[in-house]
Image (cartoon, rainbow, N blue to C red; front, side, top):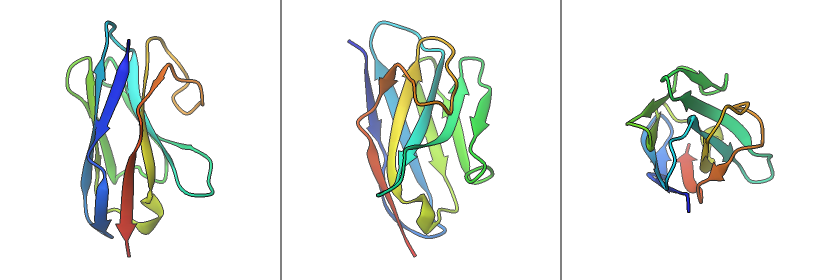
Length: 120
């Protein structure tokens, strides 16, 4: 059974940094991993993804502040720098076995979510 375990959320002041991690367990190599986030009252929105060949895509509102990376086939991290209050949300890791539209809602596996709170 495939599971995604997330860690690294927390409370930080505006301008600060956090690092999120996502570790996949299970018997398959994934095509891509990435993150969505969901703030209270908002829909879940795409943040970033990274493909097996290490190519990556970012949402415009995090580009230049967030950095996604992979550590082998089963681990990914999201470095959040220069955080703003509007980055406050629950961040969800995802993974796909095959190519899926990164910003689309359909992904094979999801993590449990980790809270990121940015105080102004």
